Image (cartoon, rainbow, N blue to C red; front, side, top):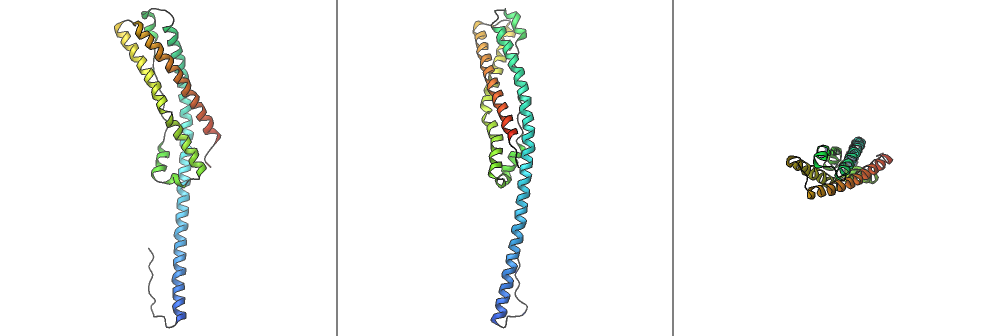
Length: 209
């Protein structure tokens, strides 16, 4: 807060009055300039912190994408084996012990991204950096319904197998449903893998500067 004090002695002439007013104006301009300078450097510091945090988080998320690709590749192989078993004509007793339906996809970290939106530092970044960060996180979130559809197919197939093991047999309808869910999961697996691979390539081709 700026305190403007009256002169200790009254101005006796117009010259003294204008000198006093000019002194006050200059003092105010200097104070405002200093305040804006401090605010500018504070905002720049916030922007740099946000950019560095998002950059580190993005690098970590690329590692998460790679791990997910490895897991999806293993799942694809298992799903292929399951489909081969279901189409093999082997008895229920032969195929039920070997049918496996599992999933494990890691979620990316969004801590830095959410923090930058809450504290307002995201708005301080250059437009190109905001666009990059928005793609990095937004495109992954857009994939969430597809990932959940994949989980649903896997879990539904797993529930069918669990029931069949308890009953000791697979009905013709259950076998047909298993084939349908298995094929659907295989297709979703490939789709998610392609998108994750594209994410990795896109994120590695750019970086926040």
